Image 1 (cartoon, rainbow, N blue to C red):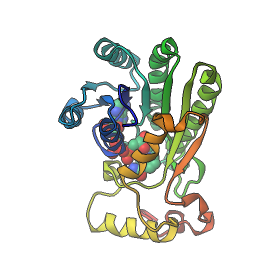
Image 2 (cartoon, rainbow, N blue to C red):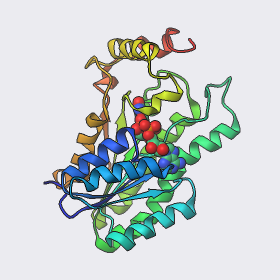
Image 3 (cartoon, rainbow, N blue to C red):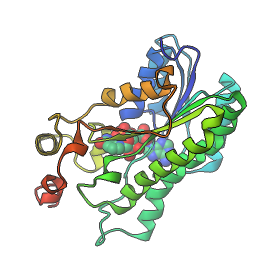
Image 4 (cartoon, helix red, strand yellow):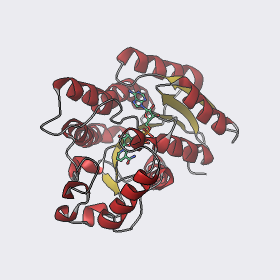
Length: 272
Ligand SMILES: NC(=O)c1ccc[n+]([C@@H]2O[C@H](COP(=O)([O-])OP(=O)(O)OC[C@H]3O[C@@H](n4cnc5c(N)ncnc54)[C@H](O)[C@@H]3O)[C@@H](O)[C@H]2O)c1
């Protein structure tokens, strides 16, 4: 097993990619702290992990709230004594509409940046002192293809996710001498509850995904949480012990497609 005796915190671990990563790590022998905004979802995943014979703690905490973040980290140390792996996965655009130059607002900017960039910073600031103490850590930050190759205009979200790459590179540079590895995963479109507020499940979503997959993804399909969990496991384990400050695109080859041919910006996408 690749993560035996390791302890991980996965933020936003109740569903989607976070759940997929938490379960993958547990299968490899890792004890996992599952964080989410709502305790019920986190507890369900923690139960799944305990059923595999691993230890798991569900923690309700809003990652944009520093007090809640510090409590989560204190609770983790109390229960497990160390933190080897941190996955800054929590994020999204829930509760915010639009985001182009006609629709973006200052209020939405603050809200989105707070969850999708400041949140990861706060969790890092709380976790890293414990990693420094052990002279070991693996940090994995979730960005988005929209940060580097947007196919629809969402200024605040894409700026925040681009900020995740800056955070990754700076932390990697600073912390390498202490054997704390920091890398980013840049997901393409992955089928998770993330999409529910943008396009609810149903024939409309199926058609949208089929069109995106056909026109924008060289591998010809939308990704799954398992597609992200594999690269996350690589970055969390000893398989990547000479890898830090790297940005891994997990997007079905999407960076290979041409900007001009993007489906969402062609007027055929939702609202187009
Ligand atoms: N699904 C995609 O197509 C896609 C593509 C690129 C990047 N991403 C990013 O990948 C990450 C995972 O996305 P997903 O698709 O699994 O999303 P999801 O909506 O399925 O799950 C996100 C999780 O984060 C939690 N969360 C949200 N805000 C939080 C907060 N303030 N504090 C604590 N938890 C919070 C939610 O409760 C949920 O459990 C996110 O950062 C998302 O922005 C998603």
